[in-house]
Amino acid sequence: MKKIVIGNWKMNPQTIVEAKKILKDIKKIVFPYKKTTLVIAPPYPFLGFLSKLDHPKNMSFGSQDISMYEKGSHTGEVSGSMINGLGGKYSIIGHSDKRKAGESDQDVAKKIEQAIISKITPVVCIGETERDGDGSYLETIKKQISIGLSSIPKKELTNIIIAYEPVWAIGKSYKESMHPTDVHEMTLFIKKFIGELFGKDISDSITILYGGSVEVENAPELVRLGNIDGFLVGRASLVAEQFAEIVKAVNAK
Ligand code: PGA
Image (cartoon, rainbow, N blue to C red; front, top):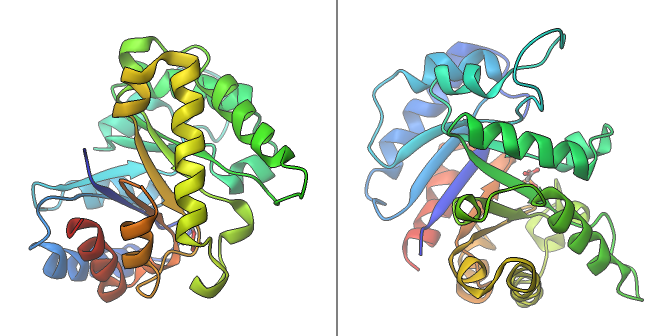
């Protein structure tokens, strides 16, 4: 199974000078962890520059979004082929920040299609905003998966990465993050549902990441008990020492 850690830098840092420095520090510390693929998703203006710098073989770059359109009059949008041209090999799609701003499951489906057309690996974020007692959050997850992946050809499905990020656990402290055994329960649920939709061969081979307040403190337990293939990391991916510890935990699996 693939092991992968993706750093979502969001709208950070503020300058290319700082971005270069963080990347340089990360490269210095992560080189022993060769079994793990590292993906850095910086803001668009830094992507082309950073991806062209020398980097280890197991390091790749990605975007934090992708347009659902191929080209044309779509002010502010960035297409899959542009991302690819900037050296982006992955695109985070359906992040809760975008969903909060109005992105629908149908939009997510179109963005996944555009990524595949542009030979970019989609990192599809799913996750409930809150946990209700009657379990309707599970229906939210099912809807995100069934609509999001509805128009993907079966042969492409094994290349998709699912990032399970319970929205209530994002941007908190590791103490408020999801408990590793609950993460395990959710990855089983996600795999089972994908299996029902597309077959066991797909669910067995699909990569599932966890995201939401992954820190140095909880990463090893999440790896050990969470039944995951890696992480989507926000804040901790901007601090080289912290990011390296998280990568180390995944690499040790
Ligand atoms: P966090 O962000 O690690 O800072 O909680 C995760 C994310 O939003 O992808």
